[in-house]
Length: 338
Image (cartoon, rainbow, N blue to C red; front, side):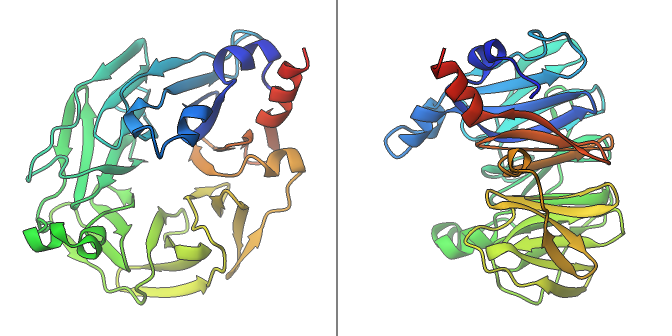
């Protein structure tokens, strides 16, 4: 494992991973939340849960590789990373608050402005790095891009605003919420969400894509093979582009895929239940050593590396083999047995 007991106690003991992002091949960032407070979330409102951003610097000396910043008053925090204008970790919470770390900067920026014209219309639900910049998608047809410090560009363009009837109708409102975004370039973007809702943007205008299912859509990946993959409810997977789509796998799980990424020439999908890869036309569960398998939950891929992190730990794949970062249960037991 790539953590000492002391590093674990200081940075991660009592916290669990909720998201992760690769800043570069040797610097990873984890978003964690206080376990006890999160378990009491039905009583405790989300912004009262203590959260941390925990970086791991693989090339630093032992006992100096980990650190953390504690964030108070943040809701669910989504992890992202950018190369432009600076290489940084960018965390955005559901309410549009922004935390930035890297390139000599550690700060809470101004929240993403909210208005009918954007850049933020509703709650943030996902961040994604496209062409070295951070994109955000969320409810009420929220789509925007970070250009720099406190500088967000609205990409709502001609996306329709929710009417009062849609806003008041839970089903209609959910169908106007984007749960994920990805793109081959800034002028070739896809967003998904709701019951079979897929939109495409050519950089100038948005178009609703006819989609052959009314399943709940949860995740999207514009992959290195030129295809778009969409994860739906129960672990169902679709593939296509433009107006042509096919179901590759009908899932029978209780959870959808949290993240779908392209890495090492393959498609990878994960949820708390494990890690899958696409083998031809079929999803195959990846046979992993137990210490790696328990790290399933979230994926981030960049710089030739894929980071997998979840409630029980973290690991990364360098394109050829897996490296175990830490096991939460084993470290907790070791600390309690001191």
